[in-house]
Image (cartoon, rainbow, N blue to C red):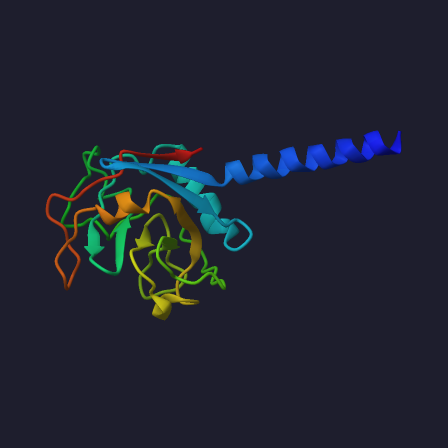
Length: 185
């Protein structure tokens, strides 16, 4: 009887852990293909919660990659001015807006900003992250413990590499690529 109970506990744990892991996988659909992102709720729980909330409610659908610097990062997530499906869309203001939700306090972690890292974009105020985020093309150690990293691309980084690049200095992009959809797996 003990063996059956022990076996049940092991199987239950495996199923539960797999389900929890699945809940922290996001699918980012881009023109060139799908990108799988793993979120780190144990590292930055509030950023993960906000990201999932905005994603699963469709707020990121149609949002442009307004700032893309080759060899550095691709920034998106301005759901106010950067949503190409919205009447409020304004490419010249994209990057200055956020969501209707309050800003988030910084959650600096030991997650390094390496290729594929997902991190919260913000102003000079560390507690100003809201809806915007960026994905690193390459390692950016100068961002470590300065920005709230909360996930990483685990599949499809080649599609992130295909995002249209902007001006080498400012990163501003004319006719930018956009998020088709972003949802939990």
